[in-house]
View 1 (cartoon, rainbow, N blue to C red):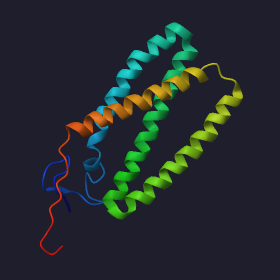
View 2: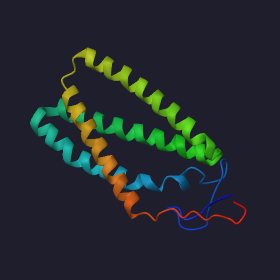
View 3: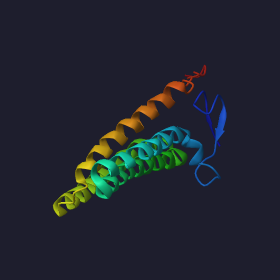
Length: 156
């Protein structure tokens, strides 16, 4: 097991390594608040979109929030996996995940735009709102979490 000194899990908490039970889950405590915030956004946004733009608008809002949530979950899970395997994998795995997601999302959004779907503007507004809500919730979580403590050994 790896020791996380002064992380959000507390001082000297043993994090399970890849293949051990809870290896990924132990690295994802930051997800709860942003997921709840995006759920609240959906609860508020979908009825408003349905009232203003009908079922197509509501579908666009659901799709937009869903895209953001899935995107951030994929990133979080891939980085958590990389950290469980070896911390030096975090940057390359994160960058490859990000690039792959952006290419995939670009292709999908271009295909959706080419159909002329009436819910596209609602999807776009929902994506922007969900990104802002996710980032705000993530910042709020980070500000409430304990700051990491770096302990230098005498050998350093």
